[in-house]
Amino acid sequence: MRIGMALSYAGDSKETLNELADYERAGLDIVFVAETYSFDAVSHLGYIAAKTERLEIASGILPIYTRTPALTAMTAAGLDSLSEGRFTLGLGASGPQVIEGLHGVPFDAPLGRTREVIEICRKIWRHERLQYRGRYYNAPLPKDQGTGLGKPLNIVRPPVRASIPVLVAAIGPKNVEMTAEIANGWQPIFYIPERAADVWGDALAAGKARRDPGLGPLDVVALAPLAIGDDVKGYLEFGRPMAALFIGGMGAKGKNFYNDLARRYGFEKEAEEIQDLYLSGNTKEAAARIPAELLEKTSLIGSEGHVRERLAAMKESGITTVNVSPIAGDHKSRLELIEKIKKMAADL
Image 1 (spheres, helix red, strand yellow):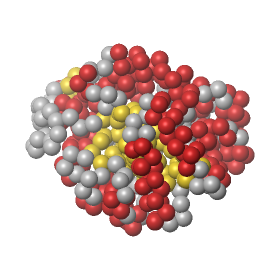
Image 2 (cartoon, helix red, strand yellow):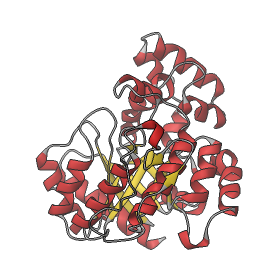
Image 3 (cartoon, one colour):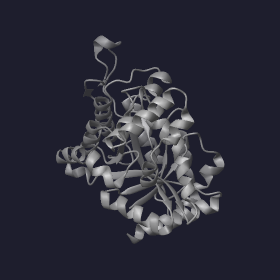
Image 4 (cartoon, helix red, strand yellow):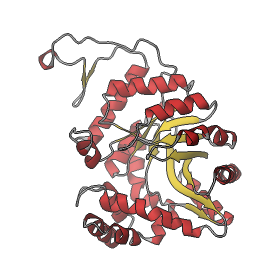
């Protein structure tokens, strides 16, 4: 089981980025940089690639709507070259609030677009001249849609790897099924090991049944805040505002994927209350309604024995990479957390 770490999408300071070399020495396997509506992820990933030697780097995630498929492929090839083959392309749809609100483009056909983006990326990484006719993307552009001067091109420099790993953030059944079919990795959110099979098992099985064996096993990446000790249970409360934002505020009524997930987990009543409160402006009360079970079972927070048990439950349910957010008062203590969880994972 790999141990990863998530960088805040609020934009980490240069000092924090420089500290990643220490995490690399502590045994961290991979770092994920998000891109939502703050700083971009790519500049951060390039900086990290230059400051580390072994640490894998991943976008976690790049929204599929914000770059052309070709630029996404070129960006991944560039980061893979800078890192000498250490990059994973994390993709996701984001949501209509960000895509239509900030980027001003329609949030349409997320499944179909994701599939076509991945197909185009893989063609470009194989250094093929790009000739692609899809439902959503065409390259070269048909003559009746432009000047007629477009021609099939391949990128000038062959990529370091002809097959860069692709990870997809997905939680809806159809999206998870597609991810299990075509991607190298899958990143869910609010992952509860004991209920994951009930929520996603059928979708994963259907996708894997059509999976190309050449892709290898699906890397399953779970996100979890991390704190180890006999007096850290209170840190669970730190997760309330974010959970309330996602379950209550990321979308409108009937258009919130995270709210739907909470309902599929069995928290139907709480999900409705949280959304009603959040959308009416009562964000603190919405956070107070987040089920304690959801916070506890999606976290690695507690005594060493408890964290070891939760880590074992994650592995047993199929998790192959744990993407942690270490909670501690200083850099040294956060490093110690990474060292501890790395050893626990190695001992499983």
